[in-house]
Amino acid sequence: EPEVTQTPSHQVTQMGQEVILRCVPISNHLYFYWYRQILGQKVEFLVSFYNNEISEKSEIFDDQFSVERPDGSNFTLKIRSTKLEDSAMYFCASSATETQYFGPGTRLLVL
Amino acid sequence: DQQVKQNSPSLSVQEGRISILNCDYTNSMFDYFLWYKKYPAEGPTFLISISSIKDKNEDGRFTVFLNKSAKHLSLHIVPSQPGDSAVYFCAATVYNQGGKLIFGQGTELSVKP
Image 1 (spheres, rainbow over the protein chains, first blue to last red):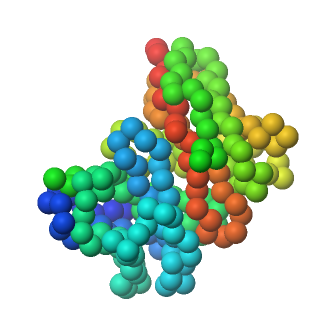
Image 2 (image 1 turned 180 degrees about the vertical axis):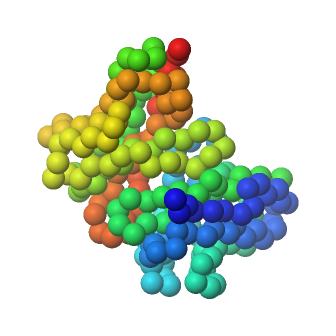
């Protein structure tokens, strides 16, 4: 069964550093998303992406964040200058219709 | 702005009995609802969904009920199994092909043998 994959599974970085989180969505899906979950809180929407552009973004998704689909398979989330409060699980999801399928997540720890 | 609420943070059920997880929403524009199951350190796994044109959808042991007038949905698991122990999230979206999901806070289900 096709699945969404994410790398790395864990990332530790120093505050102010740039990080790139990578995702490979399910191959025939056209809609891509990033969500995050801060420890103990709910899963929050960050951004959606369709047809090589951002469809929608949340208030969290400020100028420090960017997304890219650099080739036909990868979908990346870049955080330019990480802050302590960016520490969270980051989930990539993809969909062909309304049902979104999630990857296993990247645990980001900012020190 | 809690548009989707799961008021029970935890639920404990005996193996073989019914588990009922509840979810309330406030935004009447939501027209598609999903339930996800999540284990620690893993991503949410899709379980079952329902469109607002229906009031029930069934898939094996899992049934989702939607009461639009009450803005309430529930997930029934019958019979419950120890492997069902996980955190269950309900999520809602507006059908527009690529709409964001709004999640509830989750309910941790524990099924005891």
